[in-house]
Image: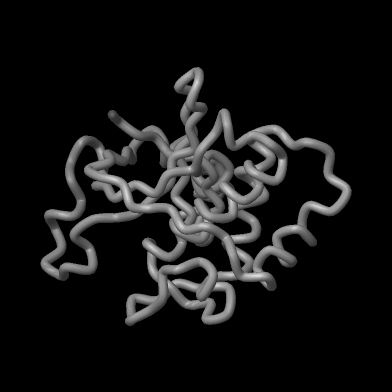
Length: 176
């Protein structure tokens, strides 16, 4: 039993990507990072970093997001400039905060001509079954996640900052 639990913990990301997929049904508008304290905080996390890879930007964005936000199902802000101060949000706020942070870093490191982080509203499927149909509450009607795409090559990374905050799963699987 201990071996099985250890395997599940160690390979949780791989297992999650194998059994769970996300499908975008629409996108949300991105927010621009404008709050001076938020900008200072982001900059403090990347001091003296040379031009990072896209994976490093994603990992930094996830780290900043999870250190700043706490999940709530109650009424909350979704504007990342406000979330930096209020802290509590839902999956929409997690996605807007993470996308805003990534887009700020992409611009800071002159990568925004090639890469963009986009907020997606979607459905989650577990072994090809829409999990949202099992919930009557409108809160669970859909779920927000983020894609980071190379505008030139189409290379795509998908991230669920909420899942990352709770289960330390960095990348997710998507279907187009």
